[in-house]
Length: 291
Image (tube, rainbow, N blue to C red; front, top):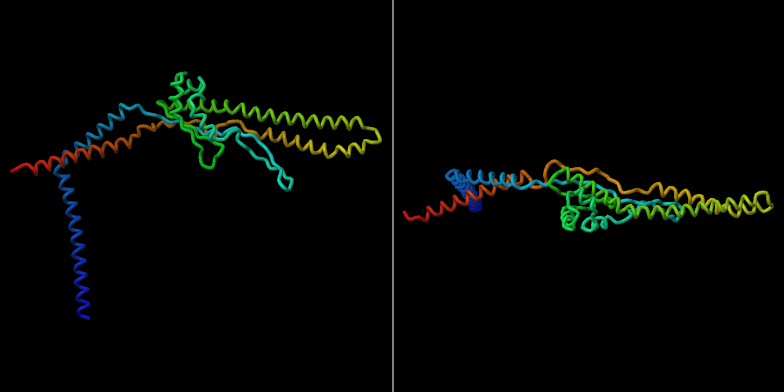
C-alpha cells in the first residue's frame, strides 16, 4: 500500500513538473515575441504604415465597380389537364426554360444596339463581347421561373440602366413565344365558339318541328361540353403572364470592387509582415557579424 501511494505521488510530481515545463515554454515564447516586437517596433510600425499607404494608393488609382441586380420572372402560359376524377388541374409553365434564358444572355449575338447603348457599350462585336463578360445570370433556389440578372459597371446609374435594358431585351425575346401561345389558344377559342354557333343555328332551324325535342337532347351534351371548353380557354388566356420584374433594378452605392475594408486589412497585414521580415534579416545579420 505504501509503495503504491509512493509511486502515485512520484507520477503526480512528474506530471506537475511537465505541466510547469510547458507553461514555462509558452511564457518564454510569449516573452520572445514581445521582446522582438519591442526591439523592432520601428520596423513593424513603419511596415504597417507603408502597407496602409500602399493600400490607399491602390484604392485611389483603381476605378470602383458597382453592381446592379434585378429579379426577372419568365413569361408563362396556362394549361390544364384532366385527373382520374375528371377534375381540371390548371398549371403555369414558362415559355422557355430558365437555363435557355441564361445561355442567351451569355451570347454576344443576343444583344441589340439599344441594349448595348443602355449599358454604355458601342454597337460593335467588341462591345457585345465586353458586355457578355460583365453580366451574371443565375436561377435562385426554389424559383425555377425566375432569373437573377446582375451587371458590374463603373457607375451605379449606368449599371441600373443596363439592367433595365436587359429586362427589355428579355421581354422582347419572349414576346414572340407568348404571342404564339396566345394566338394558338385564341384560334382554339374561335373554333369552339363557332361550334356553339353552329349548334345554336341548327336548334333554331328545328324550332317548332316535331323532332325539335329529339334534336335538342341529341345536341345538349355537345353544347354543354363546348360551353365548358370555352370557359376553360377564356380562363387560360386570363391566367397567362408576360415577362415581368419581381424586384426592380437596384444599384448599390457601395462599390463591389475594390472592397475598402478588405484592401486596408490586407495592406496592414502585408506591410507588418514585410517589416517583421526586414527586422528578422537584420537580427540574423547582427548575430553572424564577427565581434
